[in-house]
Image (cartoon, rainbow, N blue to C red; front, side, top):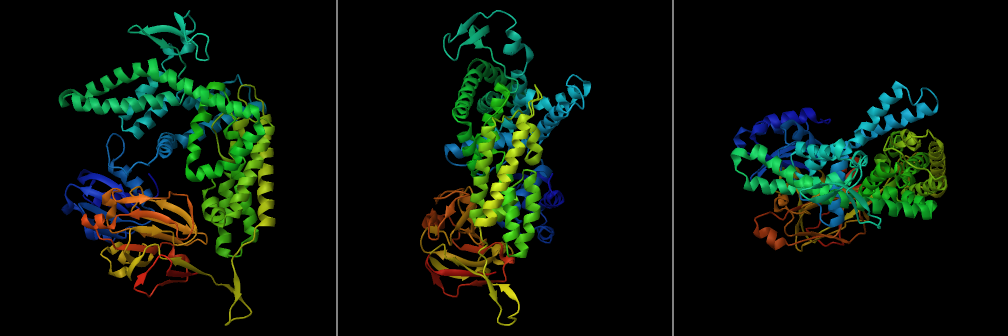
Length: 634
């Protein structure tokens, strides 16, 4: 449960209880319930609830308007209402494109275990560190106990990933766990089978030569060690999820409870052992060896590239693609050289923010630097990146350069990671070899930290200047005040009307942001300034962006158009993209949307309006995309 647990409990109670909920989704600002009986919901109680903006009913949905933090509230409501586990809930549209789908799958499978994975890794790392300093022997009971605690998640990784992959693919979680457990079954591992003589070898004379110790219904089974593996269980669980859907349609309800999982296991696991597992293992070996070959060819270049690009990959979520490769390397080779190059990136970012503290003129922004530095030293750099360096461009670039130099240091010193352990300064023990106690990698990581921070700090301190303009006040000439006006140009051509006149209480009340509404004359949304896309909703009906000066704007095309589920909308950008004023962001078929019965009134609002002294809306009744729409005064 998160920090909105009590709010979630109150919401569930006042929508009629969890038994009254058919499904739940969320958009950018509101929870969208489908209730069995809307009359059971306490509208007035919900509207007066602290944390709820208002309640609306539209298109068969009971909408509880929350605000920009709705994803966190949504997660807690799902926990309270029991919408996780085996319950199949309505979910947002999956990301489009092969790469986006791949990253979505990887993050969905690994993200739930990252906390405990890091915890176990830290225990292993500190255990190796304490043994290195002779606090106790590596044969002592203390060492054995701590090693068992830290190593268990890695040893039985297929069982853990069987559960998370099942949750991701919609398979019953305990079936996923059983698939993982079967892969870890002792007598089926190659190390156990190799005690005897193989029947014969498959692919003899090739890099894929494999011994066969037994057959299944006459079909040869290639012996593999699946403990600590990553890819095979994910693929087998995915196949099992498809088999389960078919089995549910065929098997009668009266015997479905046990016959469905029986058939899923009887089909997916033999298929996994005979075909999927070996192919996945061979593929993982090929990819791992390719990265190792790149590293062997030039550890320095490999380290520079990973260190330079790591933060960019994190922003777009693409770093998830490297994590299973690194884990696979650790499981098969005992170490990884890929992620080692990224170690200095978080420290470079932290040092950049520390340098910004001395250069920033705005005291309010300056105060953000100290907590960002503290969290950055612990490996959490999101506050530093999104709140400070990225909006100002140059400091972020300097942090990438610092990360690249740190990556080069790791490459030069041939540093290897042996565990997926702690982040930031707690990640130093990751580079101690638990088998030999060799701590040279840890020393290399300390040097990497120092170099990355020095480069990031020096570049920012000497080559970046805060562009905030200070002007003398005509009223009090002895003082200085910061006066800054930013312009939000119209993202849509059309007729302007006051926000208070549209048929949506949440927007009309101004609690979600201040601005105007536009009735579009053409189906196109363009960037209202130079900036970055913060949020693009999967249904493409709403887009949030932030200007290079920090102004956050939300464009919500039509009212309740989330129900179209992306129909009639096409996006030309994605979250994280840098955009220029006038660049096309979204196109939409306004005539078809109108035919479906939806209002085309489009709110254009400044969501961080409280950060400004004044928001001034345009007075003209019609605007083009080159016209000024809103002025914000900081």
